[in-house]
Image (cartoon, rainbow, N blue to C red; front, side):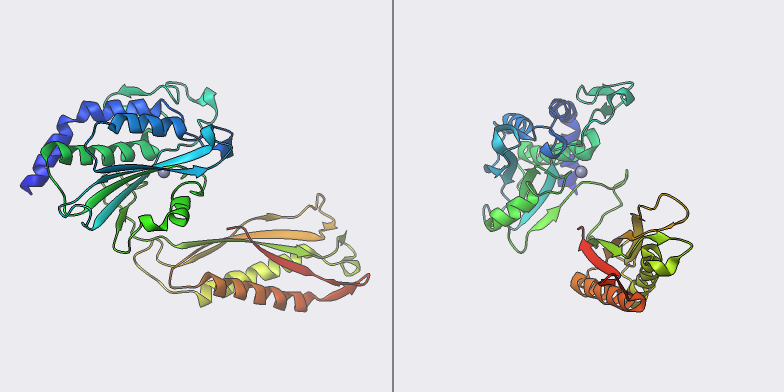
Length: 335
Ligand SMILES: [Zn+2]
């Protein structure tokens, strides 16, 4: 406890440096090439410059190739501060991301500008000051405080500053895990301070699996007054959606209080058809489901249920039209 108070005191003493570092980092836009920007290169260089003289035991830079980005790379930095058993200590990763989302409509930044940070009333205003700037800088100065006090924690701390979190992590932590699996050990703990609430009581220890799929139903467009001449894809899609919705909720109904909400969710979201008049029974109709699934369940099993129900509905409406068997129903996994 005494140690903790000492560390907190040291952090407080570092306040101006902390604010200064955050401000310096916000000034450098680090936005994904997916949005047409040049990526995280400059920000990574700045960060390396800031910590150049800090007594980290090891600093490594990993560069995921991405020809769209500045210098063709999306860098991630790993800074190691060894624990009491040096390199042999168990480890704690603190993972933050350097990239930010685009500034959006500049005319909506009426008071400050996105990349010209302003410090006012104890707050820092600028793009990415919150996500993920404050976490990144906090992790950095938590370690700095330990360094200044000469404290070695039980666990080695690995500060990981990664690229590409905002658009999917393909060139960030996902690339690191796939291209450098040797970096990770089974007993590593990982803290990701991205999201939460003001008093720090909201801590997630797990996330549900995500499954997005699109159902595409093809029938045959027909005048609504003569439905038998075609096949109304909207009706088939409604039937399928209704049964799928019921089936998934009934079969996958486990609860796990680690999660909020504690059950899996299955929501029909986007969808529609090209009919542009009340009297057109459309020949195609799409429905998208957003599912968040407890880890107790296997996504492949859920997808095979979706396929099975699709086939059942297909049989129910089965019809030969102009040598084609309708309806056609396809299931496309979006994520
Ligand atoms: Zn974030």
